[in-house]
Length: 201
Image (cartoon, rainbow, N blue to C red; front, side, top):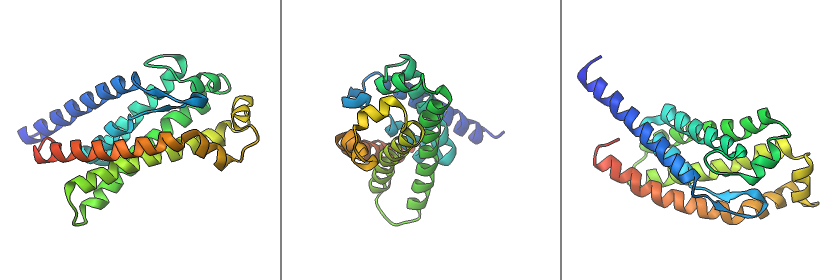
């Protein structure tokens, strides 16, 4: 291994460690919302990892987010009211819903950013779009798997209260999703651009 490759590997490991630390901090400052959901900004580190390290980085940090989210069902690194209510129905399905969805988001964000690199647009715009997509895809996959895997549980049926699936999703994450997408786009755009210009990623 050359000295340059070793430095690159060390830099990537350091960045991953820092992003996981940020994930842990963000997991403790979620903004609770009705129905056991919360506003979370944990997709920002996933988007930055995808920008810096492509698909592998996005998948790893996305997986770290998924594991933290799963642990919150048990009151570890924060607490998820909905997760705690549903994990008793099936811990395996809950792991799929919380972990697989976030890994998939990281992979797709890596692909999205690489595709955007081929287009002539400012770096801020590429990073902001990647951050927006991270938040959007997280909501899409999280809610889709929630309804698909747990839609027939008594808990979720009680929350739906006769609403259609689409009406339930919109009512549950309408404000959350908008706030998350706007903040993720703005912060990822600023941080990603700064790190690129400083040649730290």
